Image (cartoon, rainbow, N blue to C red; front, top):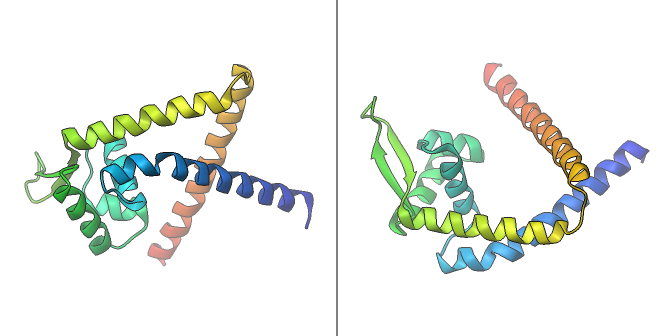
Amino acid sequence: MNQREELAERFLSSFRKIMYCVRSTFGREMAEYGVTWPQFHVLKTVAQSGHVNVTDISDRMMTSSPTASRMIDSLCKKKLLEKRRGETDRRVTILVLTGKGKTLMDRIGAVQRERLVGVLGEEDDAELEKMVSRLEKISDSWLNLIQESIDKGSNG
């Protein structure tokens, strides 16, 4: 294994640890609302986008429309999401967070920020800025690579 491959392995290992910590930390809050991780990602997508439709959710989660629809229906039954008709095109169903859904997302967001600030502790702000900028660049590059792969597959 060359140095670049070893660094990639270390990066992925660190990322897995971070994801384990995230799941462990926020699993309790989600369980109180009966929300699974895939459902949480639906809520997060809606919260970040303001409003999306079922196709947007299935595309962003890389899952089938029926699977996305089942998750959405479950979240609507839990009164965390609401379906509305599109303002410009009444045939389109738009998803929005309910008050209860917004409360959950605000609560988890606050806990995430509090815990991460604690973990970052006394780290230098300038160094953190560099690290975050690098992570954003890596994540954007990876997403672009995935999108290019999807586009090539759908365009032949």
